[in-house]
Image 1 (tube, rainbow, N blue to C red):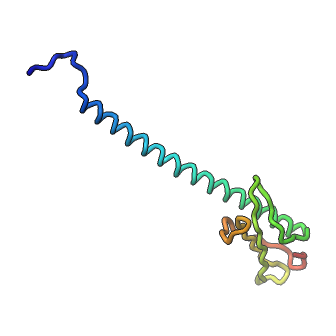
Image 2 (image 1 turned 120 degrees about the vertical axis):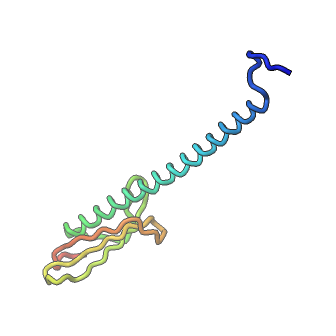
Image 3 (image 1 turned 180 degrees about the vertical axis):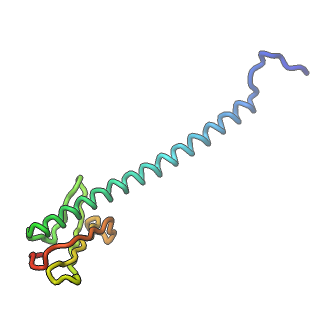
Length: 120
């Protein structure tokens, strides 16, 4: 049996080509899903950082801070402000933990310094 030059692809060749393309498409979709998840996590961390910077600015300005959540980009964050003494009695170290509201998942911790006499 001889093959003609214009015979085209066999059924097996077409099926193998489709299987290779399907595997490539599944790999691409999986990579896209993972990338989308990482982008969302990164956006949450950026918003958490901004929330922590906002709260530290409030502490430095002497604005009374409450326990209510702070909303940034439509995401609510619980902010925990902790003061610690330093070697200089006129200066206190301040840590602001920024967690997703209602969770213990801390996304960002910001450290700074304020004058020891500033109100919390």
